[in-house]
Image (cartoon, rainbow, N blue to C red; front, side, top):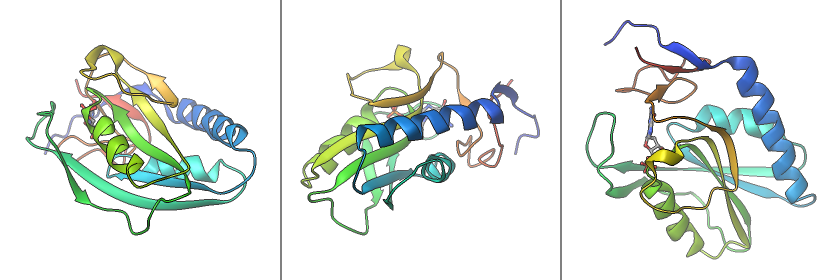
Amino acid sequence: MSTAQPAVLIDQEELAARIADLAREIRQDSPSGQLHFVCVLKGAFLFLGDLIRAMEGHVTIDFMACSSYGAGTTSSGEVRLSKDLDSGLEGRDVIIVEDIVDTGLTLHYLQEILLARGPRSLRTACLLSKPSRRKIDVKVDYVGFTIEDRFVVGYGLDYDEQYRNLPYIGVLA
Ligand code: 5GP
């Protein structure tokens, strides 16, 4: 386990302020009615928690997990569902909550399988996006922060399962 303390890229105050903006924006786009948030585990769990606490009105949540084959700091491009949702999506206004869009392959896969389940609407909120790394053109409706091609940790994001508990987004030296 590394003991290096990651350098701050996005601090707690910036995260809280931007997430409050995103919550307002998402709610404004659906002024009434229930929003159903699908959190992609594990990296998006803190983002989901803060996003829905900053949001007014009715919300429900569910969780799914997927993994791309291979370890380390790059993904291999093959995606596999490792935990499915508990309930169906038919007729619901669904927001996918993702930690980071890198190549876009994971999100593209998730959007395809969730759309096939018949939601009334399907949108995506990502805390972070690295557009320079895209391999596929994927639609992201709400982006917290656009960042350069650097491997980030903290605020739910890990390196080898470490650093998820950091309250900020950091970069390893
Ligand atoms: P994609 O399929 O878009 O290439 O990768 C998406 C997934 O790769 C993210 O949900 C996340 O789990 C992981 N990932 C991509 N970039 C980073 C990064 O900079 N840091 C961490 N911790 N995970 C990343």
